[in-house]
Image (cartoon, rainbow, N blue to C red; front, side):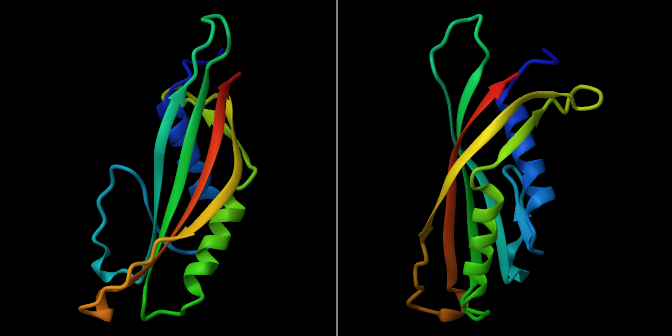
Amino acid sequence: MAGVFTQEDVGASLFAYWADQFPLAVSTVYPGTRVNTAALDEWIELWIDAWSRKPQRITSRQLIEVSLSAHIFVKQGTDKSRVHELADAARVTLSQQTVAVRDYEESGAPVVGYAKLFETEARDLTRNNLTSLQHSMQHLLVSCRGIAQEV
């Protein structure tokens, strides 16, 4: 075993995968970062919503269930199809992918496991701002569950 398999390794690996594979030019906000979105017409917030470790024997390889979501925001005044273009790209990037989990604390970032992402689901969470369309946003959620297991 190259290193200790942690939730941090899984999260960092999923975020690095997203940064490398997402095909469209858009600002991505990762957990723990602060971004002033007032000047942005569109952005994606990548979240890890849930972690779960199932009871297992001490001698077996660690297994972590993860729920990942991409919140896609586009201002109402922009191209109406843009939010769907971003959501489609997120679905392609996440759906049915296998991502190497690396230990970025170790030299050379060795592979310590793999995360298998399942099918994505998309929901429209757009809420209209009745007082001003100027501040209204289109909000789509693309979510994906997966399992990460150490090697």
